[in-house]
Image 1 (cartoon, rainbow, N blue to C red):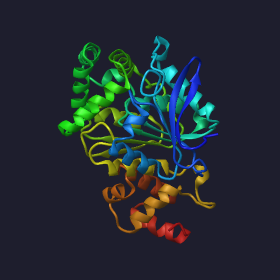
Image 2 (cartoon, helix red, strand yellow; image 1 turned 90 degrees about the horizontal axis):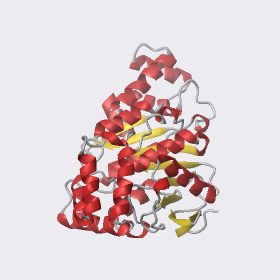
Image 3 (tube, rainbow, N blue to C red; image 1 turned 120 degrees about the vertical axis):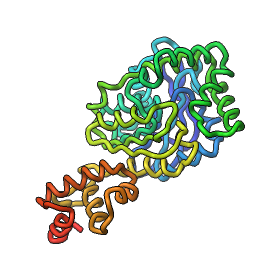
Image 4 (cartoon, rainbow, N blue to C red; image 1 turned 30 degrees about the vertical axis):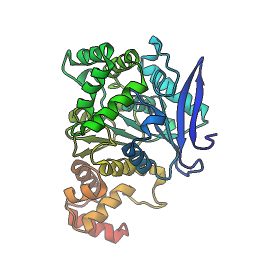
Length: 348
């Protein structure tokens, strides 16, 4: 039911949601959906080479579906008060999945879209294959010091040009003046000042703290250490609260994944999307999961936890936890002993 690539529209009551399908419709992997960010424009943002590079890299041979939320981009521009809730964000994503006949999907949630992804994954665990979060947070009130959020929203509401420049300084750390100008034009063409302000208020009050423990899909949380829009600690807290989640810290200051050094973000997201689930392991995995066997092979090569972390694009803490689990499962007092036992069991 996905149909050919292109921009299409889904009826939501008396309004229309614009969505875009890219990539093969016959991929063996579940389609990849990117919940809408604050404001976006399906046609215009794809003109940016960084956006194309990021999504082409992450989606690769998968079907990619993106959409503009109601009020922004190519969707109908009317915004109602009832739209400005987390429940509406989840309902919109469900309506898109249902309208396209998708029973199971993977989600890449970035920034405020990460809240939608988390809430959807917790509400409909049977429908989410894998979850990748970038620049994520659980509680919007923690994004800025008290009063700062109100000042930013007021600047947007009063003067969209000035407001977009303020946001550019936050989102695009290190970008040149041409990039700031392009960003400002894109924001102003994606939504009116009033709509942008209303949607940003929603960003600052989203709260998915109660949803985190209910996520069951294999989850990877990617965050740049010096992200100026969403503090690094908030991404770490999201990863710590989701059962079994992997946290991948990256260097960088830009909030948008398609700015700065894009390739490490792409690799981290692709690794998260390839994370094996229990029913996808080898026919006879023995006592170790496929990921644990992968870590064990690195240990057998003499790699340290930090070297394994770099090789697998995960955090050293995650590697340390895997090694501890391997030793426990194999009843081995040391890494060397674990390798010896695994060799005897044919696990290497």
